[in-house]
Structures are given as structure tokens and as C-alpha cells.
Amino acid sequence: MSAALHLAKPEHLGKLLPLVAACHEEIGLESSAEQREAAIAPLLEGMPYGAVYIIGPTRAPIGYIVVTFSWSVAFGGMDGMVDEIYIRPAVRGRGIATEVLTELPKTLAEAGITALHLTVDQANEQAQRLYARARFQPHEGEILMSKRLIP
Image 1 (tube, rainbow, N blue to C red):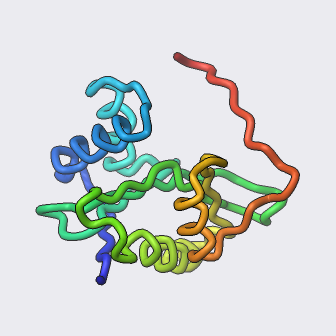
Image 2 (tube, helix red, strand yellow):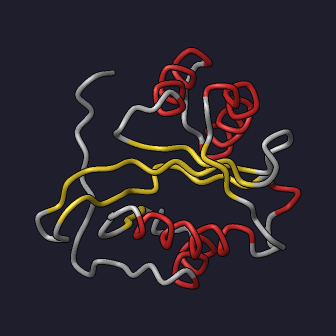
């Protein structure tokens, strides 16, 4: 299956928010509609810290991926982090996520992004296999640690 990717724009907000809500519900992340909109809308309006891509047709998306950007001395420049990727459950298992995680890095590399990172739950072996198929590798001996600054 071919997973068309489209850079999301402000007019896509109404199609994206239900997908983000479904993603958050599935992973057990508590977020309100207002919080989700406040997090997604600036990226659609051109905020330089990240981008949202619609997976599938823009009129009826089958998923989305959010990539955020930062600077990395270790990787020699601008790098990206897959903040969220979501595919509707009804179309999972068809290679769509693998295709997205294989093709999007090519586009990002052309734009000068030096590396793409993601995190995965240690217990989620299915997701780990997906990411390995897309050639993501674990950083042995490293643990991602976070501190929430604003509730």
C-alpha cells in the first residue's frame, strides 16, 4: 500500500484532531481537546520547531506523524524526533507505518535534517520490530529521561 504523505496546513486541523484524540486515548495519555489543539495548531501554521504530516488522503486521513526539530552537536546539526505516529487500527498491518518511516527520513535529509530519533516503550515488541524494519537502532546503555516544566 502506498502511504501518501502531505505536509499538514491549518485547514487540516479538523481532520487531525480526532486522530490525535484517538492516539492519545489508545496510549493512555490524558489530554483535553483544548490541549491537543494548542499543541497541533502552531505546527500547522508554520512554527519552525516541528511539522505534522498527514498519512493518506487529506480529505480522509488514515494517520499522521509529528516530527519536532532541535539542534544536535553529536549529530552535526538539525535533528528530528518522531513525537507521535498514529495509523488508524483498521488499516494497520499493511506496511503503511514502515513506508512512512522509510520515506519521510529521505525528505527530511534533503531538507538538511541530520538524524531522526524516536522513543518506544520497552514492552512494545511489535513497535520495536516496526522501527527496526525502518532501520532505527537503539542507543545501547542510554535511557531517555524527561522533566515536565509546564503542567
